[in-house]
Length: 134
Image (cartoon, rainbow, N blue to C red):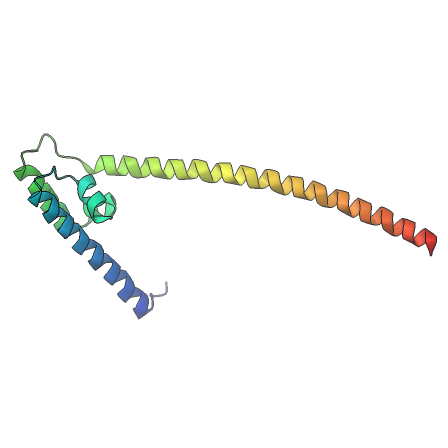
């Protein structure tokens, strides 16, 4: 397996660092405004995915700690399952959309092939008529 070029690794690291920074700022902003803190709220405010927040151990810990401090407690704690199920729902929706597009493309290809057959037939007929006049 080939390694990524250094410039791509740096770009990915920079993108991750910027996302982490946005998440920290969003968390502080929500806490300062005394708004409910959840993975979805932080993700929405920081323009990152909930998956990113759940996988980032430190951010996950901070969000859970803020959530517990705000009184949400253990009973309201969100499990990663909702994020996984929403991800699964997104995957299912995209898969259905892709299947629909594939069906439409197959139908269009069939129509175009039929039109091409007709055009070939007309072309052949015109060549035969032309051959008669020569």
